[in-house]
Structures are given as C-alpha cells and as structure tokens.
Image 1: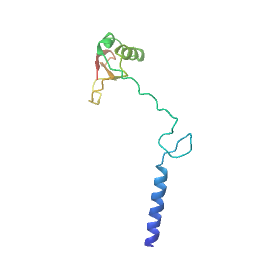
Image 2: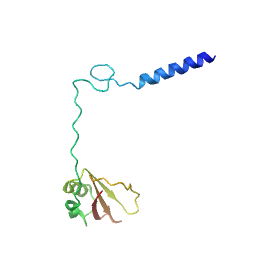
Image 3: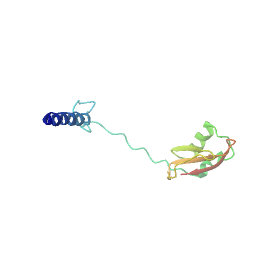
Image 4: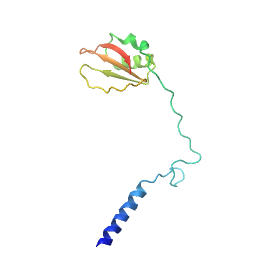
Length: 112
C-alpha cells in the first residue's frame, strides 16, 4: 500500500511538471523563446505634466473631457477620483488624476 501511494505521488508530480513546460507555437518544441522570434519593443514612457490638463478644471466629467485632459497632459492613463472614493496611494508618473465634486465637475488635475 505504501509503495502505491509513493507511485501515485510520483505520477502526480510528473503530470504537474509537464503542465509547467513552455511550448513554442512555431516549432512545437518546449522552449521559452524561438530563435527567429522578436519580442515587442518596450513602449516609451509617457510622463504626466499636469499643466497641460488644467484646462479641464471646471468642466464636466465626460469621457471626451477625460480623454482630452489625458492627451494634453501627455499621461499614459487617467483616473477620475470621486469624493470619498478609496484610492491607491502609490505615485505613478504616467497617470493623470482628475478629482471631481459631487456634481461631476472636475475640480483638480494632478499627476500621480
């Protein structure tokens, strides 16, 4: 009985190890990269400049206004912060934060 438990454990470990191998879609061989493949180039950093987004202060929180503020600030992403909304506190130089009031007006545009 004891040897069958060990054999079963060994088979389970072999199945798990097989599932963890990486298959190349081009060659059918297990490898992490293929010789002719190219990885995509990293994107350029898009740092936020809050001065460019100040025109949005006082405007309505619309999809178009948020997109335009993000574009003018040069930020990679934008988020809208509502009153009392929990947020993460980490600084992200590529993010524009647009704070809105209870009526949906943008009251501040800051990077982070």
